[in-house]
Image (cartoon, rainbow, N blue to C red; front, side, top):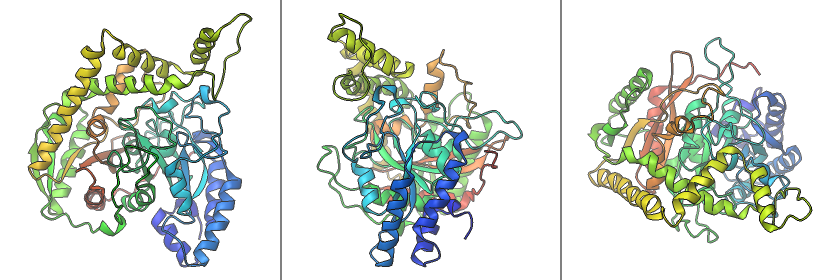
Length: 495
């Protein structure tokens, strides 16, 4: 079999079980593809020794007939997940040299299932960004290009390295995290599938925190079936995470029937934004039509507090970030600034944090500290929390009225060029999250499915939002949409 790195998780799993290929062969094909794709800057810490060791162990397990679905499958791990003995920097200078003595719960569960870690993937610093331009490792490049133009495009953020690596077939799948759209937006920009599960479905233990009430890990894969396979391995109750749900994890793959007859799909009128590109508008209408043709009932719904979601998110997320990032002070781990003679502890904190954090992280820490300060706590933070409750209630009301899933665009545009959105106007960049942040604020599951190409040949994604804890049902609706859309485009190989 040639081009082993181009297989999906399901194809590779079946080939491994049939004895057509070994995990070592799969892993070597991916390692070769990674080494040939340095220009994409997706993998930032390569771990070939660990990968081959795990691949050999996986081959033994498969031979013995005791192998879970993920056994022997080569994947990438976002740099936000702590991995024992391997640099885990959250793409920040302040964690330079940090090699944890422990493994995050999610990466441990994947390892226990026999998955093969190829290395750590690039991302926005501390997961703060929508374009993967805030990383200490430099920008990730999207493998897709606009027509015949060779301008470098963003893969989206913060899980840009994961998205780029999966789209370019450097790994069969990757882990991502999603605080305001950081799995779904890059998935849409690179023509892959990304699901953010219900808050509490995947353990957050051992994942570097950005905003603890919003962060959730999830898989980034080549299709919906792969997302179902990998999500099952990542989920499960974890006593080390107080927000982890004590719920059984269903066999998500077995729920993929593609039958959505009689399902009610809501179309929220508030997501029709002024200035939305005609191509996104058309894709959304086409997606609704595809679901209708598959037997679903399409209904108009209202989520009246949607317009307050972005402002509420950009109060709550920085507030939690400012609190979570207070621990990076040059004392316990990571980098400490060089101190001058006579410098005291205050100077050490100031110099370390000024040197260690990039501009976007500094901006969000300052915003967060401001909204939590004595004079502004009620005016900003408490008000944002109340708005969040109203946004959650909007969704609860819609689901109580019998709606099974909600269809929206995943992003307001296709991938834009690196450097096109300047740091001078961060709000422009924040607007990229307009369709995704509501899902995090309400703690709901959301999935981005590639559904078409724009006029310049770039992928566009549609988002489905599901009921809490019903990822299986959501994946099945996404499966029906994927089958109807028939998206099979891949980026032309230029790297």
